[in-house]
Length: 546
DNA sequence: AAAAAAC
Image (cartoon, rainbow, N blue to C red; front, side, top):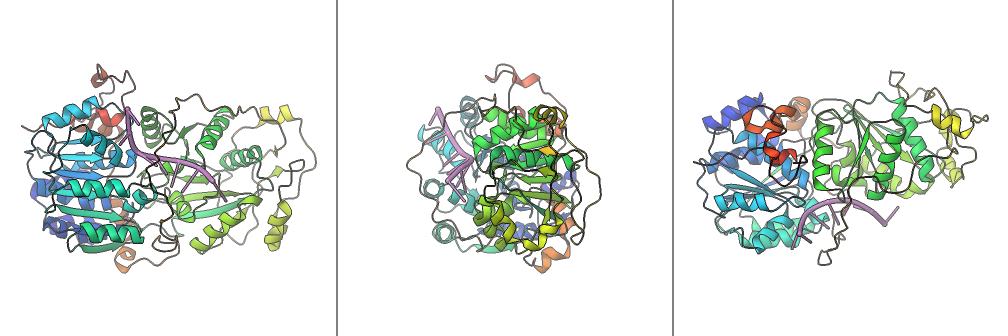
């Protein structure tokens, strides 16, 4: 346990840390901050939840000191793979740069360029960006990167997955070679190693496993259903969500189209749910995420845009509507819960056609999640290979609730179906699964769910042919800490406490009001070109350097 | 099998 005060940070920065209420540094902060303060390069092998963001933000704030950026000449650059992650870094930066004259800008796609350009013209010390928008602005002559003193690459392996490596390489080459580089990746596939060898100078390598990924904090359950029919899956999902005492949960789907359909279906059945994925308008994405974070929205139905990195400290449930095709995505998905010392429940709906993906997941997590049985009458549903699923786990067959033979009239079932409350009490592994919902759910009933996309604004798909393939992604087992993987001694010593230090949370009012310290939802929206839909992070006032 | 990221 190391206090922040022992890491060499300046009094101003320490005060900002103290204001967030935290005193103890996480293992990665403890190791990275002194190295970064000394001006040396850092190669951090770490995931979200380890305190990574503060590990690079604090020394960056400290080293940049007071702001003196010239127009279009940023002094520091932070690159993140998704817009929400970039926004999260910006929030963190806003907290820690409090009390300095540093200013910053968030450069992401999906929002108007005008305000970003105006900020750049005034002179910005720190750019926090997604690669696409940054290069776009660069090509328009709005940014010069020759003054960059510190460059941060966050979630590099995810950038690889997303085909950003050529962009990252290009950005590296646009910055001066004497810059300091802080580079973070959860895994180290060969392509990432090559990149670090090319662009980092004698880096100090720091590793920190995900501290909270243990069976103690994340309970995993598996629900087998006999059909792969989407209607049957939605029925199972509703029964599952209904039986749990869900404070707030994320429902993961593999496809964006499925996200829309599932969200709409849940809404129609009385659940408080909203979709989020990359084809939705950015202002809606921002609004939806903010409302989920604040606790207004209960169920977030998401693509894997939400699987990694987002720091939502208090997610009680994760539902995998689809089994991830890539096992490491599963680990990231369930990692959205069980954070900051809280407990999380995770469920995975498995159909007969998911065998292959499930095998990969089970192999990676090195455990057998307990199987739950939903009280659903599947008779009349196409078997879809149920026999295969049954044969696979014969010893569990007797735990299934007896099949109901009586069937309700379809319309009656649909009307009557409402979210069921949990009966409380977690089953132990040795106990048979209890009957789930009070009322049986008829899987064969027609469902009033239109297959049409939800009413949200859909953006046309972008096509980017110049992107590389994903084929070079790391083998899943390479560096992704499995749930059961041993945790280094330093992390194991204080798992929950260490996590809590990471990225202290702003209250909703603070987030909205930024440094003004009070809510100003309406005021700054005027004349911004966003109507009333100004994303929260655009409302945050940017401190102007003297 | 997908998702994500610029106009």
